[in-house]
Image (cartoon, rainbow, N blue to C red; front, side, top):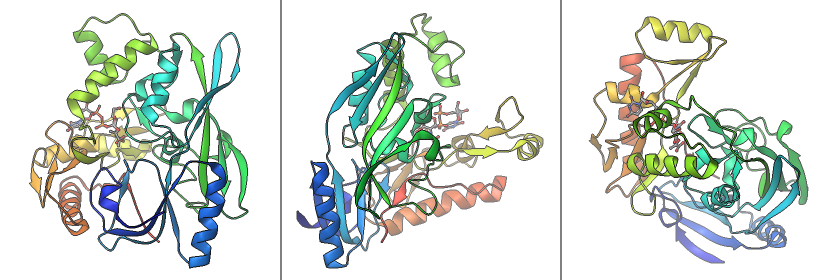
Length: 339
Ligand code: EPU
């Protein structure tokens, strides 16, 4: 147990004041202990993995931050076509992806190089290049802080949608600590053209015909390395804003306004918020110690900011400009540590 640790040191965006207590959990049994400790002290608990999608406030957190360090990956089932893996929540996500692709397993290869832990994958239903975690998730094992028991939640009870689940939205937020994640992968190559636009562009430019999990991982890693900052060297939380999902009527309206959008077969659609930000002339702009990435306008890079106040000013300016020009309210992607 450590005391008075700056949240800026625990998160990739590198802002946020002191947390009263920080405890690293390496065994499931320690979770119960940590919650009992917090209860005795009358303090709230916040669970974090690698802090890749978490923002701290300047006031810090008067409570106990649990760092999930539960490790291990095992094969729990296998048949001719599939392999089911269970990984502990504190495993590094990309290590888990690599574990699958080196075995020729398909399902999460396009999610290569996403920062953070395996346990965070279901929380915000991580996604990239047209795929997301919901397509392979089977279940999660959780510590239920209400009952102090370990239970299993199947995918059907997770309310998964774009960057969202019952773990980050609704009345259950903060109730469950994810202990392990079970995913079912397919043996061999399952993905085929056409791929998500930016991946397809790369495939066309390089005349790629090998769509094996290993090769897709390789391509995605190259594309990401070129566009997205590596949080180890550059402070950011990846995409700071979400893309905008529209029903058919809203999509028709957007089209009439001349906004480019991706349509689904049922007429619903998606607007790239990065495009909206770029059209407002903000791409590459410096704002209060932050910079809107020159390569991906959804990404906010912390160049020199040391406070949440600066972040608030930067995001307000971006949101206001997009609202004034296009009439859309951008939603923030990372979560904020709160009591
Ligand atoms: N675009 C622009 N300008 C920009 C950025 C994007 O016009 O500055 C337009 C382009 O038309 C481009 C399209 O948006 O073709 C899509 O851009 P990109 O492939 O870079 O993806 P994104 O929509 O900006 C999303 C995810 C990323 C994920 C990529 C790739 C969200 C919030 N972000 O970004 O996820 O890696 O797709 O699949 O959905 C993250 O969540 O932290 C993250 C990095």
